Amino acid sequence: MKTPGKARVYLVGAGPGDPELITVKGLRLLQQADCVVYDALADSALLSHCRPNCEKVYVGKRAGNHALPQEEINRLLIDCATKYACTVRLKGGDPYVFGRGSEEAMALLSAGVACEVVPGITSAIAGPAAMGVPVTHRGICSQFTVFTGHEMAGKEESSLDIKSIAASEGTKVILMGMSHLRHTLQQLMEAGMMPSTPAAAVQWATTPRQRWVTATVATLADVVEQSGVTSPAAVVIGDVVGLQTELAPTVAPRRLAGKRVVVTRTREQASALSSALREYGADVLELPTIRIAPPSDRADFAAAVVDSPHYDWLIFSSPNGVKKFFEAFFSVYEDIRELGGARIAAVGPGTAAELKKYGLMVDVMPQKAVAEELIAEFDRKGDEFGGVANVTMLWIHSEKGRDIVYKELMKRQAIVDECIAYNTVPETEDPTGARGRLAAEGADLVTFTSSSTVHNFMALGIKLPAGCKVASIGPVTSATLREYGIEPDMESEKHNIGHLVQTILAGLSDGK
Image (cartoon, rainbow, N blue to C red; front, side, top):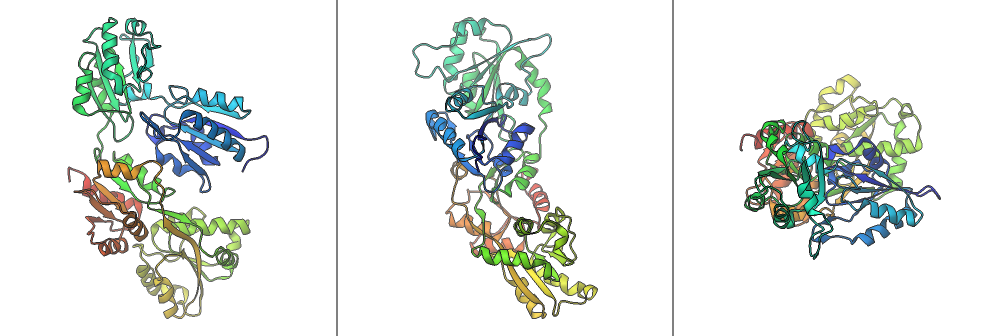
């Protein structure tokens, strides 16, 4: 919340596309922001770094399709400063390179709002570099010019000095120029630029969707149209384009290159799976179908957390349960040792890994992350800790969790209490237009990591694209898919994200 006199808006450059190319400072500010106002060109994966209670406002701007006019964005930022101590305005590339960031800064300062710009890597340099073209190279050129091709639209007279640009030495880079590319190139040639000058265009630079074409100033417009390369793209002109064939191998091919994979996990959890898939070159489309919400009975949850040190066993069914339990625990207790001497059980390695972040090792954990396997593990190891009869147990799980753990342990005469730590609800918002993109562009694979993701995907009425494969994290999720008449094409043998990624690699690599 806002502290009087302390509100500040940060204009943060998200970089050219790859979410890992944001600056360290930009990432830190995202992690502490109370509100994030973001554009279409800022990768939505960056939002996974935000705090759970951070307000996220989409003002996506693409050529010909503005969610909010610039004047309204300016007013929105001023309004955010009256509500929040830290607002991040997340903009693709660099805020001050054709990003209208300076206009936003002026509006904020005029309204008495403190603001700070955090520069980002501009696509004017990163775009050409990602396809293997340096904007400068010793012996070829020692300067470059960046200009916009967008401002010419509908104007009788351009404010650009095309003659000077055409006559200048070195590399030329055009941003936001795809819709008027042919006109711009024609103007450059009429102003004296040699038609044979090497030229290239790179779309979605630094992302798995990246593709490019090379040609000359005279032929680039035709080549672009034939290839289907469109916005967002950067155009580079000059002799440095000739280095592309030599430097292009630095853009290493990856096993999932050219494959589009849909991730249906929550926004907070999507990053782990998305990042792993991106490492292998997949074009990841994040389409969250569930959202983590507080339990219906918060008082009951709070009471269970307060009483947790009095139990012999704590049983955690999911990583989310671990997170929500300890968020509440440390709001009451200051020291992890106040948890007492309880033994710990976890349904699978993913849950155990989350517990390890708090310095807790598990006493019982099945290799397969299903409730039935946890009960079987208790049966196998029972003699090691004297069985479960008359032992007090606190089962931490979701509101919609299966009741296998409770019923089976009660059958074995354990004294089991429930701690409902969170609820899963349908994610109805689609601020980045992922659903529309899935419908328009299709996908090679849709991943499901829980029964909840399956139910809510179906409830949203989203149709699987023709020829699209389905990957399941385990047998419970697969059974839920079959309820809807969908047979999964691949199922992870070990039910965690790491093994799911390896299953996807085996199922999609090598042209499968």
